Amino acid sequence: MTYPLLFRLSLCFHFASDDRLNFLVYIKDCLYCVIFTEIGLLLAAFLFFRGDVLVQASHDQKYNFEIIKWFTVAAIVYLVLGTGIGVYIAAELAWPVLNFDIAELTFGRLRPLHTNTVLFAFGGNALMATSYYSVQRTCGTRLWSDRLSWFVFIGWNLIILAAIITLPLGLTQGKEYAELEWPIDIAIAIVWVSYTLNFVMTIANRTTKHIYVSNWFFLSMMIMITILHVVNSLAVPVSLFNSYSVFSGVQDAMIQWWWGHNAVGFYMTAGFLGIMYYFVPKQSGRPVFSYRLSVIHFWALTFGYVWLGAHHLQYTALPDWTGSVGAAISLAMIIPSWGGAINGMMTLSGAWDKLRTDYVLRFLIVSLAFYAMSTFEGPVMSAKTVNALSHYTDWTIGHVHSGALGWVAMVAAGALYHLVMKLWNTRMYSAALVNAHFWMATVGTVIYIIAMWVSGIMQGLMWRDYNEFGTLTYTFAESVAAMHPYYAMRAVGGLIFWMGGVLMLYNVIMTIRQASAVNSTHTAPVTAQEAG
Image: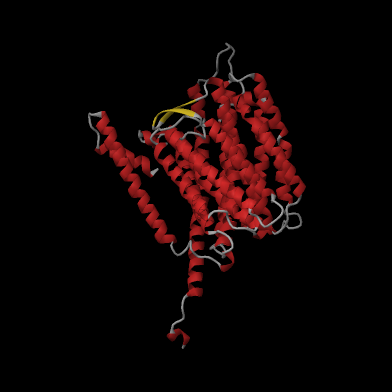
């Protein structure tokens, strides 16, 4: 939220009658703000982590774990930033005065920034950290190209920086989860293909015969997201920051939700299932309950999920049969989804007692409960009878966040805690803080989704309620006013979740400092006085 305020200040100081001059001065000051802020952040990161990130245990030299460390730290920082923006805009819905009549702080500008920061900044860095780590360990070989790995890290985070600049300025294509303009879309494609190439070539150079199932899930995500992003982003540029989709009308809507749902289906589901299938067995010290079931889960998800986007467009101009196909396959997807969730949970068979003492394992297992719940709720909501009530209501928001907070964020948090301990070869600074984070994340998520379930169902009922004269009982404004307590409740739930993320960031920073101090103690030369 720093950038919009800086932009606003620059406007206050450079408000001229000449619109073109005003715009040029505005852009100049924006660039100055961005450049100096980024230099400051990079310098601070270098000074803080120069000794810490380079801590390297001797047994790690076979693999490239340096790049994993940077992805890991970036993911945790973006978790706090992205959820912080989410809390702010949730508070704006309850108390609109919080936008201060500043365009860059309005809900419409910050909501896409929130989704992009959480999905692609936090989620992207978490996926890249975990996939690049697990592929090295399961294939017994180093990442194919260290330079390409650094290119992916730098390129991806520069893309995020571009999103942080452009979205508050209102530079957007208006497509959900695909708001970024065409120059950034091209950069995303280049970096994503580079990420995929490095992963595939690492598998090609493996020293093991078998390709572990988590790598199949990661590959499915990479290939499908490449296709979906490229097709959905096809546009005709008319200026540097404006373009028009090559699709129009109902075709544009269908292509958009083919991307929109599969950003959930492959990016947030297949990718994070890859995390689950590697880190649950590793953290629990037990093999996957049923490897055969994991393979069935993979193929069912890969071939089934691509059909589901149409269920977002029930009761629209989309042909009715298309929505029916999407709903039917959505309901069928409950079976493999629950099979995967049960497979992950049953991996703890005979070792359930570990949940009492292993707080990291709690994140991983509870995330599977949210995954099971979300993958049941989504198909039910796709059915036309239910969709008639739920469509366009906050129930959909609750459903999305039960998956995003309960499944994605919690399984990622568990994996990132595991990575921090492995990469820096140390225990967490405070197990109590990990436990506190777990409960804050769980309670915050539950408060959030309950608030949205109740408000969403109430919205749907109020919108369709008729009086004895055949007219609507409630005006739209009355339905909005009725949402206020639930919007406040949502903000509270989000705040609790965000505070848990802050605890995680602090705990990780102290863990890294602790590891650095231990390493310095072990490697420091002994002076003559100490020897004597």
